[in-house]
Image (tube, rainbow, N blue to C red):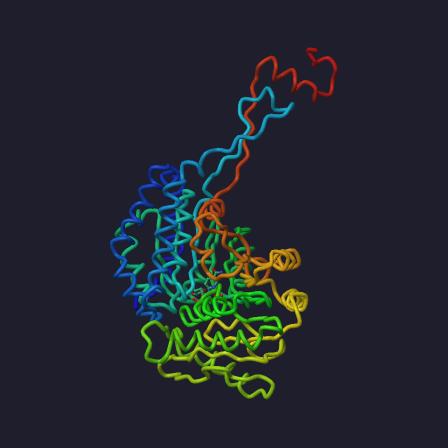
Length: 464
Ligand code: NAD
């Protein structure tokens, strides 16, 4: 575990970064490309080390660890490939009033010094992903990794100063006191990933200095399974997405609304898929643990409260071991919207299945709750998909799948309403850390003055 950054040092760290930014060094495209290349090369070379570190924190293995690194490698490669094009000023189409002007354009300028605060569930990806965008846009940045993932925090503290320009990129370690001290400093943007409750603290602190924020939050992401869905495939994909990192993924499908005509079939197929993936979940190397005992207890309390209800049935799972932070993948059928599993974001391997009459009832339930980070629609009917798209709002939508939007370079990633504000990934990330500065460059020549003079108050100054 890395020692926490002394709170007294935090103001000078941020001041130092402002000085670096004012030197203009991070604005040059050469600097940005050099930093991104260093990060890319480092992650490609140290993939195994990152995997080791992340699995120490989260007990992840296989594809789940790979995903942690691959997303950042992809982000860096994508930024390197497109940076020249993203950073180019965007010319404004000429109009009658700008006909005589030298230049009318939107310049993409770095905001300045960014504060990036990450969460524990993807401790490398959620700090280095936004860092890629901050660097691509030409900013200085301080990263505050989650103290809940101490091995990853120590890894970032040790390696980032060795590979990146430490006059422009800093890491601050620690928990609430250190984050609070950071938030008291003047930043040009705060990029936060984590729960909505802390998101409110971040936004309140930012408001004191009118600092813009990007908030990448969570929430209960629903799935609607229509009667025409391919149930076998739908169930396998759902079982996979629900148990990736034991459900500790912001995009994790939280609950299912299933059409009454296929409800029994879906429940059976999900149970079968889970059993085929994890015949013995507790012994499976592919199945992660819950991050700590506190979160395990939070989840087992929900599990036990739901289990105690007579109208809902445990279709599979239900066992747990708090000491080893293990919770078996657990599916409840016959769930009601007012049940314990429907209260807060689960962020764990519990799945509640609610039977609905049709897509209209599903839309009603989705609209009655906070706007989710993601919405999953499982159907072969474009009409049904479009009806749900037209009548709901969510951060993103995936039809007939889960999670893979994270790997699509230029799809903006972010929430709406209670699931967050602002986007990143690819160009959206570049824009999140940029200011769109307008430039209107006029001339002092005869023609220009002719146009200008139309605005003058006296007829005498008009050469026409
Ligand atoms: P966490 O406990 O790691 O907290 C996140 C960060 O907030 C940490 O760096 C922590 O130090 C800081 N923090 C915690 N309490 C604070 C306080 N009182 N004041 C200031 N800073 C504080 O992570 P978490 O909040 O448990 O994360 C889980 C949540 O994050 C879930 O809701 C999940 O859906 C969401 N999430 C969202 C995304 C996304 O991209 N939208 C990604 C991952 C997780």
